[in-house]
Amino acid sequence: MPYPNLTPLESLVAECARRDDTHLWIMRGVVYVQVGKGALSRIYPACCMDDKSILKIVHELKFGAYAPQDAAPQEKEAA
Image (cartoon, rainbow, N blue to C red; front, side):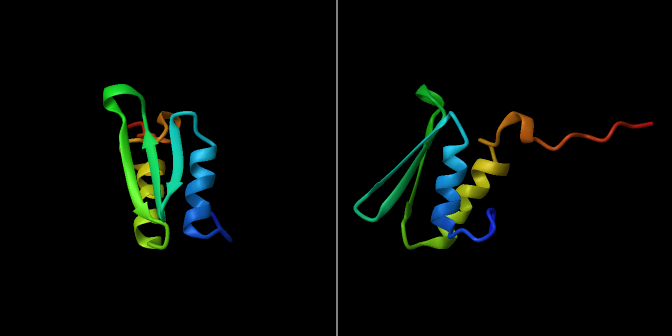
């Protein structure tokens, strides 16, 4: 789990709260996360009770296409 001692939904809330480029809302048992702005934005939906799908969204936010640029793995310099 990305954040120790938190449920997947709580982990998603924590990840979205630390970012400026996400909006999270919950409606009728579905959690929605919008990432990015304008035409390049994407909305990720997941059932609030579907821990696996929620963890996939957290992973995408942390390590996928919408990962913060400063969190990208750095390449090792060749000596």
